[in-house]
Length: 187
Image 1 (cartoon, rainbow, N blue to C red):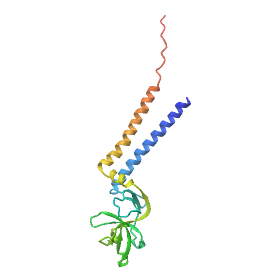
Image 2 (image 1 turned 60 degrees about the horizontal axis):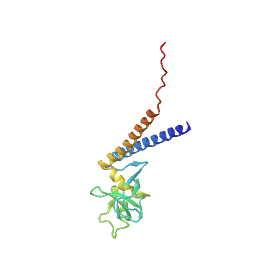
Image 3 (image 1 turned 135 degrees about the vertical axis):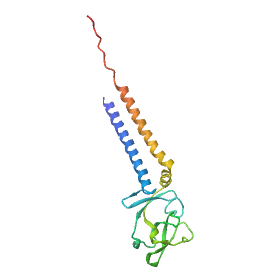
Image 4 (image 1 turned 180 degrees about the vertical axis):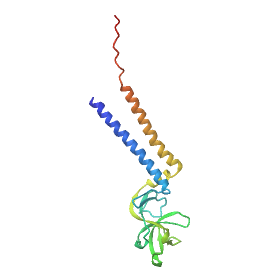
């Protein structure tokens, strides 16, 4: 009896974990799509780093947390910022010089030999890097943002959850004992 109770609790825990995993993944995918590909939480946004221009400080394939900012006056030389280029590409580089009273910023990747060709205009700055880096997760985040990745991330946990539910139901059916029949005596 005690073994059966333990198995029941383990089953409930696994079901809960799978359900929460599925809900979490659905939330992340929907939030990523709604935010234009990058989830945002409490004024911070996660960005994938897919080049080696900031190595060794930020490794290729990492995700970083940036604090979204409209206040460019607090930026200073040495800060690492994420900005949009003319082609709407996001780049994360270090400020090496501030020009025109904070209206233009000269940036350079730590791993680059020279400053970036174009100065960054203040209105193109998206946010400031806050020091949080998680290696290799950027590759997964980029994949999840594709149609195939979103589909895969939603289907696999769904199949696991469904498989676990079917297994649980099958085990419950197997444990049901058929009712005992009492013989009918005819007199």
